[in-house]
Length: 60
Image (tube, rainbow, N blue to C red; front, top):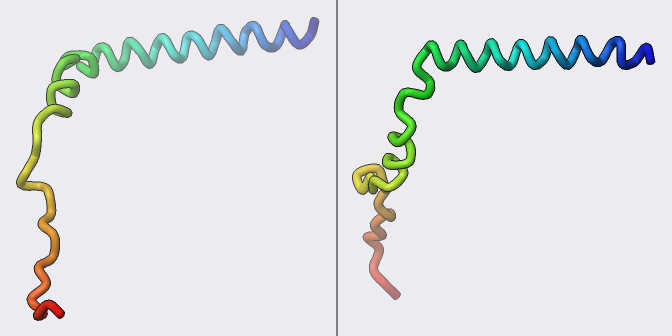
């Protein structure tokens, strides 16, 4: 029973910290652009793709 007396307040404190973190993220605009990341993954950045090295030596 002494374990429960320690674990219940610890769980309530952890839940309160998580709730405060959620409200902090909500206030700082972390959830403003919910569709942006899902659309950015579809955009091809062809300029960022490195080209394969050109081999100037004669073949054979």
